[in-house]
Image (cartoon, rainbow, N blue to C red):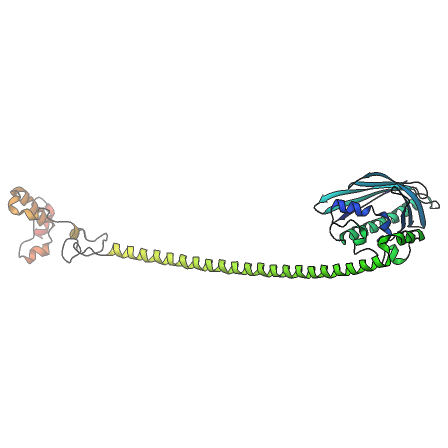
Length: 340
């Protein structure tokens, strides 16, 4: 017994996918290798497939769970069984998986024949399962009847290629949905739906382009606003730097400005920059008690003060007054100078 598994994702709700799959008699309208599926009652069906030859069997339904699983088992003909599961994997997304067990047809040599037949069956089954997905996706949203799908009777289907069995043709002729009048109405409806769909697609594309243009315009305006703000920030920073520079200059100028009272020529604190050799005499009083007069100073202090002044007074100033240079009797160096 060979085993095969194929799977496909269908963009539709699980209930819609389950219901449309259970229309077995519509399989030849969109599948290629299934040539007939006809019912004898609700649980029994007859199948004909064309794969490595023509194969037929009668099947009975088993283990059906609504919106979750369908199963079958052959009663005669090609020995096979299987099940199909339906799993919701997301909003409007259903995973369909087929588990198939079958006995290779008689006349195929050993395991190699089983592999070849099984491998071909898997490929064909995968292609037709993908056609089922497309059939569901090309039907109006929420539709439960495959006859409403645009993909029915496509050029590779068994019905379009005229390879269905006589039993399938009789079944379709008895189907009220397959009368010439119904088929013509279906064709007109699908054409109208196609025009509407194309118009909606164009409107959607136009809306998307308009939205993209608005987004681009918004992006450019935002970029321009950011550039303007950056320029304003730079200008503000430059103004702040200029103001700081002005304040620093004004602060230095104020520090260097002369005191109008203490910086007069010849007065206390005469205008002169402070240097290591600078203006100590101009800023400090040589005679702190000059305002008290000579009477307020004791003779001893006056003599000491005069002597000290004479000691420090330059010889050229004494010479201007016509006086002799000062000689300190206690300092032998002055004696030597006077003797010279």
